[in-house]
Length: 138
Length: 138
DNA sequence: CAATGAATGCACTTCCATTGCATTGATTTT
DNA sequence: AAAATCAATGCAATGGAAGTGCATTCATTG
Ligand SMILES: [Mn+2]
Ligand SMILES: [Mn+2]
Ligand SMILES: [Zn+2]
Ligand SMILES: [Zn+2]
Figure 1: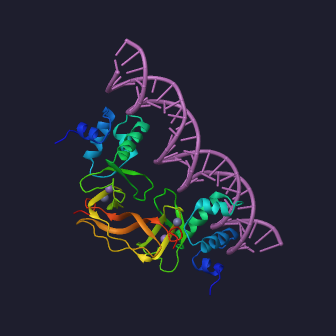
Figure 2 (figure 1 turned 135 degrees about the horizontal axis):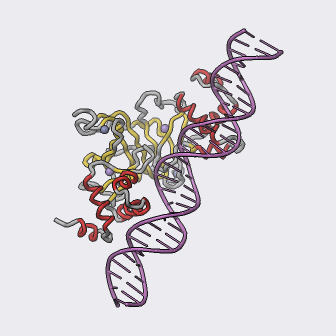
Figure 3 (figure 1 turned 45 degrees about the vertical axis):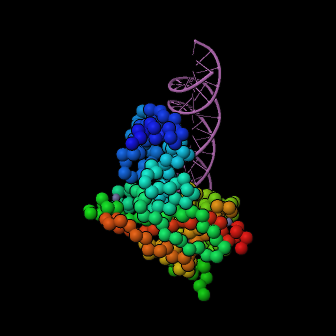
């Protein structure tokens, strides 16, 4: 059982107070978050610092971006089953049209997609939209 | 064989010179286009007019937007096999990492995607990235 | 303690989408 | 045909978000 500090250092990420806070914030969220979400959670922190913090996390492979079609970049920690470091991170994402939240369905892999002759598939982004489990009253 | 004028009118779109030009531009393009692409093609026209022209086309169901993950909205005419008016337009899109162009693969339908219990799927956006047929030297 | 390099904060820029409003243009009504 | 009406257009401005430059602060180390 590593501490967060040890984990970050193992990923070659220097530990700072801000980075610890942002990491914990991401870890306790079960949904993807926007930069504004983080900004609102830490009103005293500068937006640029937060921006560069998640960017560092992304560069070091512990956070991945999600483009869910809302036009706003979402972020989430890479967790069990999320292989972002491998070029093709093939888990799918679900965007709720009701509450507006987007979640990683890490355990749901994207099926093989056929493309026409001459096309070479390197990566796939798949976003399912609909009603999430919380909003469907389940 | 309808004329373009008749087609637009059948879709409840008032015919103007600008709309005819933009429609023809979209029709002769075999790839998706950005607003800037249209702007460059009609240097004399105002950006806002072009923006509202494609928006009108979209509202009337003859154009659909594509979010290919580049952060810039793409547009394409709805053609044979494209059922945008139906809530679930399920054809896939291909973005070429080499030439940067995005195409509708209208004939390639998106397979049924399983989501966990409690989630309700209403729509799917699937973008495949890789090398297109022109760039792969096929 | 001095020196070095990274992290942070502030200001600024860029890019694209979107809107307000006045004007132009077309269509309908009298 | 003239007047009235409504939509389309052009110009200016706004808004939202990503990204950058640079000076300052902070932490590490020799
Ligand atoms: Mn994810
Ligand atoms: Mn399409
Ligand atoms: Zn929901
Ligand atoms: Zn290409």
